[in-house]
Image 1 (cartoon, rainbow, N blue to C red):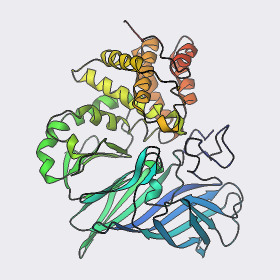
Image 2 (cartoon, helix red, strand yellow; image 1 turned 60 degrees about the vertical axis):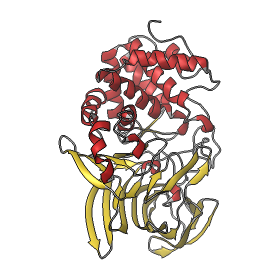
Image 3 (cartoon, one colour; image 1 turned 30 degrees about the vertical axis):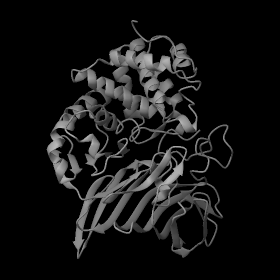
Image 4 (cartoon, rainbow, N blue to C red; image 1 turned 90 degrees about the horizontal axis):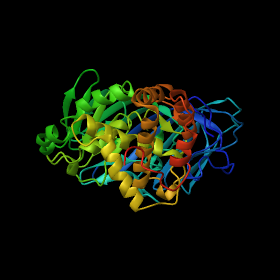
Length: 451
């Protein structure tokens, strides 16, 4: 299995081929080294959709390396690669950049890999539709989950491969550019502006993101953490309606889940409609249809905010455990509904239990299969599993467990087995039957609570 923390070198998953990191995405991720930092210097021209970049990757080998690979989509052409300041041979095919250093890298050897590349980025097609870099009517966004990061930068594209980032993006001056982390500097020269962001908390590649558009910035709060919104001027009047309770949400989730894990939080609203919101580390992206003055998207506002704890700070170590992200964020919706005067978590549990019962599935929550890992039943059954656990161990133990979970695995990677092991410390009775019923068996168990 992958390591339990961001510092552990990754090994192939048990039962997986030796050349695969994760059987759900066997073509993604790379073995033999660990990237400890990404420095991305990017220039993007909006109108022609032209991206050029220099990626500097700081890495350490943990086996002898005569050559190694990175994930990079085919529309991006590489013009030069160096390893430790020496030109390196490379080939680029089938979304893999294979690099042969001037001399073999010994185990424990430090590598500074510099890759110069350019092209017209486009989304990567797969079982989940198109993911990665996406053009908007005026601007661009990144929606990487689960394997779209390679559409715009060379990377080790696996969720347990977490590292700090520095992202510099230069684009036409009328546009606002946002990336993960904290804005370090902004410099305008002639018709272009360079925005430099530092994301010091380790981040998986699928959560790295850039958003570019004709946006204005509105500050929503400065304490205890800065909260901002970036959106088209025409949508500002709707912001207080659709996102008006977001600051209260943050307070509630801090109370339930523990300290907010990043230095700031930003909401982006694009000028285009989006089918679903998009999570990224330290910010979330919504479509204009989610900011229409109706407040109908409030559950999604809660869901994406909750991902900052469950998914962005504590990240799954393998894709089959996606319920650790989506089940937790879905349950956060129900908790917020109850706290804000809407339906209780128990009422939502009953509502979605009946829906699941009417449409049974044959897969287990801990192994839904790669094509179905983002199906709605995974979200809802994951939330029901947490509700069943809460009723079994009691509110005090349940919320203490969630705070310990977000603290113990803060900025790290974790598995279902890790959550099971931690939960045992908060129960006076064995939870084996509960896990067998809800996680490891396909049939839907009896409803957790009064009928």
